[in-house]
Picture 1 (cartoon, rainbow, N blue to C red):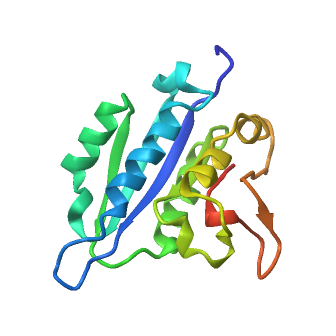
Picture 2 (picture 1 turned 90 degrees about the horizontal axis):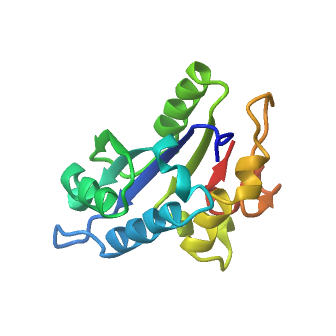
Length: 171
């Protein structure tokens, strides 16, 4: 417990608008499940060293107030990185993670998103399984602060390009 490093979790949350102007219902349920997975992970005893930084995309069903409530219910430290009206694209979030890692090069990071099923290579794994894979003790411990580069996720896919199932990972 004392040796557990600080951990930054970057979380991309996409709510796809419906034709009637609402949003699909899955984002709130999925986000709640993923926050519970974080809360129940092996580092649940050191949550004071875990910071969740999230950005929402698309519909505003998960505005900052809603996310603050969900995070508070799970006793998690969450900070909004803002909202983008456009649907999710990874480049801005990856740039945010890169910039963070340059400034905090000895800190572990985890990347999760609320819609891993949108990735063709996520297979039949559930959102919860993919999330738990990125949060697994084996993944976090595989990235000691003295390593220069390491990444871990539930299942590595070398084709069509190197990635992790559902694009959820830790580094």
